[in-house]
Structure formats: C-alpha cells, structure tokens
Amino acid sequence: MSAAMHSPLGDYLRARRAAVRPEDVGLAPIGVRRVDGLRRDEVARLAGVSQEYYIRLEQGRDRQPSLQVLQALARPLKLDAGGIDYMQRLVHIQSGGRRGSDPAALAEALDSGLRSLLDQWPATPAYILDRNLTVVMANSRARHELPGGWEPGANAALIVFSESWRKADRHWSATAEHTVAALRYSSDPADPELRDLVGLLSLREPDFAELWGRHEASPITVRELTVELVGGRTAGLTEQGLVVPGERGHTVVVLHASATATRRLPA
Image 1 (cartoon, helix red, strand yellow):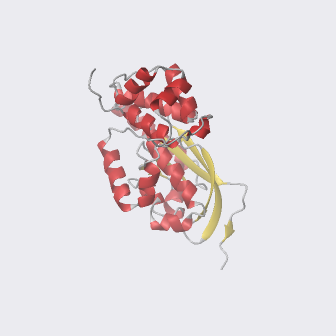
Image 2 (cartoon, rainbow, N blue to C red):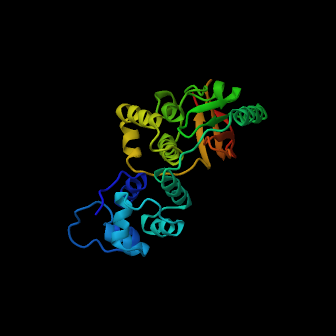
Image 3 (cartoon, rainbow, N blue to C red):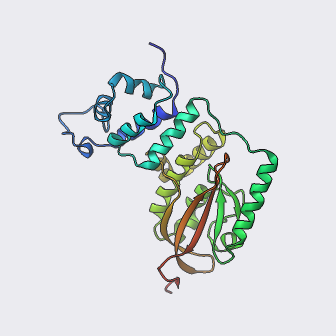
C-alpha cells in the first residue's frame, strides 16, 4: 500500500465527517463511539462508495474523484452546492492545477474596469477582495464610512475580528462565521500568505481558531447586517458578493441600504 500523501480534500473530508452527528443522517448512535461525528465506513455506505475508496480519498491516495463522487459524498456530509464547488477546487489544487497569473495587459484592463465599476456607486460602500479577503480596491464610501479601515491592502478577516468592527456590528457572531467560511472557500490551502494570515488570527483571536477548525466553506453571496458607521449612524445593509471571472479570484462586495431604515443610535 502506498504511503498517505497530504491532501487538502482529505483534510476537508475528515473535518466535515467529524462535524456530522449520526442522528443527522438517520443513524442510531449505538454504544460508545471512538470518533467524533461519522465513521469512515458510515460515510462510504451512505455515499454509495466502497470503504477502501473513501479511505484512499482521505489519505490522498486517490486525488482526482469525479464530480459524481463529490456529489455523493455531499449527502452524508451535509454539504450544499458551495461545499461541492469547494471540494472541486480542492481536487484541482491537489492534482497540480494552480491558478496562473493574468497577462499584464489584461490585468491592467481588468483593474481599470473594476475601478470604473466602483465609481458607479458613489452613494454605496463597495470594495473588491482577493481570494485571501485582502482589499484590492475600495470606493470612498467604503473607506470613510465602514469601521475598521477598509483601505487597499487591509484584510477583511482582520477587520472583522478587530475590536472596532466587533463593537459596530450588531450581529457580529454571524458576520464572523460568514467571513471565516468565505476565507476558506475562496483561498488556496497551499498559499503561504493564507497560512500566515490564519496563523496570525489563530494566535490573536480564539474565536477565529474555533471557527476555522470547523472547516465550513461558503462564498460571499447575499446577507443582511446592521452596522454602526463612522460618525455614529447605524445602517441596515444588504451585502452582495459578485465574483469577477478570471484567475485572480476577485469578488466585488457592495453594501446597499436594506429595507430596514437607516437610523441613529439611541443616546
């Protein structure tokens, strides 16, 4: 038998398997279980694959499962479409696929287009994140109204876990969960910058370490939040994430007024 290899997909499968309780998938928790969550044989049986094949996936000895296999594994692991997409990207990464760089001319044209896009929202905070949630661009409303300093080069995860954002966000716990899941979803596990960021946040913020350990992954889509803006005004906002096609993993994030009326904090 060949030696096990490091596998980003295997790491993810193990973490998600540990997070699912037997009763979540219709299994009776009989006797004392030596592992958290589901056993390998239970995942394999519920997914309709052999136990040996599933073990090979976790150990990194089979690095290119088909989409059909990933969809089958998603059922016992309680993964949604975002989880399936994330597994596909992990397969691409561990199979040797790497995201290349855009040609310089194309990158320059793309940057110019994105700057123009942000300028179209002068009354709405908007910014662009890379795959590690670092701010690439931000319009004036984002830089001057959102707490925490949304300047190019800042990192959204570091901002969300900062004291200023914790105090300003009425539903901080949900924002923290959303941010950590988005970071895992969009990033490359082999990226040294990601490892440095995760290491820094894990040492500094116990909340982050606990959330990162869940291995939850989901893209930035649409959600509601209530934030005290710079100057003391509290705004109900709808966050909308728009993925930019291309190899650089950019996401445009727009925060527009929600149905909840913007109001001032009580004295």
